Length: 272
Image: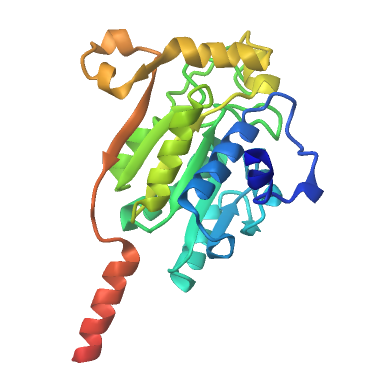
């Protein structure tokens, strides 16, 4: 019964998906529709926007108001949707490359403005669709097609990036910790302001193959063994947290969002 209920949120005529067998994108997609179902949102009042990349293909499989847009421009399109239809729940789905590389500028300024958007960032630590190039989140010294001797660059910490830019709800999970993904997406959608939910997922086709984890379950095991809950991390030393993935809710701040502030100043100017 539950399976049939969740299928109602999908365009099954678009199946099968383009994702590799074992790809974690499907897990995040299911967590999203489960969160929507638990919140009892009306499909016609939900807009889901994506850019370009493996994860961005998710909008093609979702039966909502969906937009599959330009590379890196999902947040820009979503901004327009939200300002035109402030009554909609507007969600952005995108990969680490799409949102923090070519779309990085939009990410920063949407956080700075505290736009009422929910961004679900699929972090597979690599460019999966275009050949396995390293991305802004590829860990230091890990391998990629463009870093055959190991990544010499330091990677973005998406959580710290979002918080420092002004996001008011930020959380992180992995596909191994599925219930937390559902919980954080629900909290992000309900939060008024710029919400970022980062989910570490697997690309065993490229990231895994280059880094000795050629099977999907190898990366799941990697997540299992290298995750630390935020509450526990607060009591550990920096050296104990090296190369660990800290998961949990990092900030939840009640602050007026962009639309609220704009509406307030508009009415004030109208009274003059």
